[in-house]
Amino acid sequence: MPNHPNSDDVFVKFGPFGVPHHIDAFSYYVSSPGQKVHRNTINVDLRILDRCDNCISQSRIWLSCGEAKPVSLPFNGEEHRQIYLTFSVYFRDFIDTSIYGGIEIKHIVGYEQNSLVTLFNVLGSDKGTEWCLIDEGVPHCYGIEYFRLFQELQDREFNLLEIGLDNVSKLSGCPQDAPSLRAWRKFFRKANIYGYDINDFTFSTKRRLLYFRAIKRHVTT
Image (cartoon, rainbow, N blue to C red; front, top):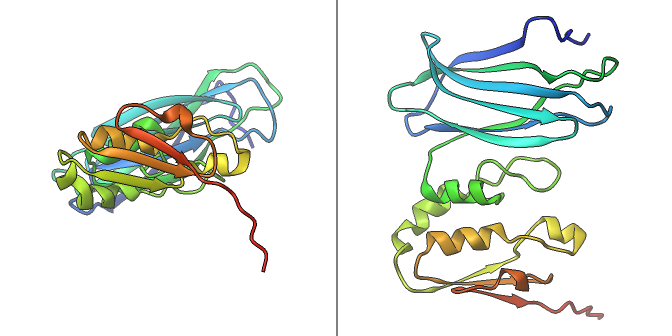
């Protein structure tokens, strides 16, 4: 049964559970399903609590029908090894009285923060911990391992080639962004970044960033 808008907030608490010492952030992907269309908007408060129920990190987002948003909560993993995750849900705007709407947590990813993951998240790349751009799956989280492998190259001059630039444009054929190329250009401050894809990404060309377009060929044997 739906919760009436004048009732108490919906509150869910998970834990306590242990956190490995290197984990110092959680990324969430929260959606308001749009199968039944409505005009209500819903607030979601996300918190991390310590074992004594003290809040150590929090954020608030609001969602309209059919909308989804990522959010990341950092915390001190060295100090807090036993935590709770809590969620409070309540109406921001209650307009449609027949269809209330709801919230889904698509994924929660615990990870160790680094500057490359932050870049991927801010720029909207699925190589980070927040965004999955196809089928609302789990983000690839490659930035966690890429940082370990590549951090020593940040101030070196070299050439980097990325093949395949955007999963979304695989379906549409009309790319509008190349978030990982922008992230590489910011992370590697002296490198030349080259992108290679079958779709047209010429809009992304700028200093130290050059794009090559592949040609589709159908080979018969």
